[in-house]
Image (cartoon, rainbow, N blue to C red; front, side, top):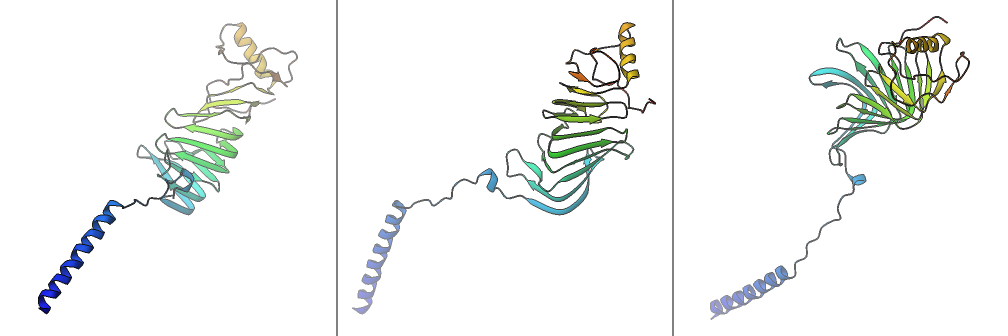
Length: 235
């Protein structure tokens, strides 16, 4: 009798337990957290004291020096983040440094191959050109640099300021619009003689608003340099 009673008691417990399980399944709730926001995404890699070489199409083209480098593929679009400043060297095909670039903050969007530099952006080339602005974009797919903010450009021959800047990534063929700046008298005369003789090729682009050169008058000046490396002239 004990044996049978025990079996009956166990069977009763089993039925009750099964009922609880079924009821629990019917009333089950899914506990999920809120979606992670972009600013909450965690970087996949964070490196400190970075000094590394970066290749492009199998060729070493850049050196990156940064205090902190974050690689975050969880953001959309994925990007590299340099919140504590960036110093970048660009090499030519012979591995000679041809351009120095630095900024307080930088983002590199890896899928777009687009650099966004912000805060005290400064570029210096081995040809003696210096560029400064508070913002600059570098599109590596289009091989183009551009800025929609006030920019200051100094070369051995001239000095320009303007609200829009665009250039090839080697800083040899550039354009500054809504400009003002200083030129040498010979530079202005050379451009004037070339146009008078029909040998110059002027581009359809905005002219300099104010030219503080030594030449008299307000004759329009083509702010686009000739397509060659800048070399100092004797004044």
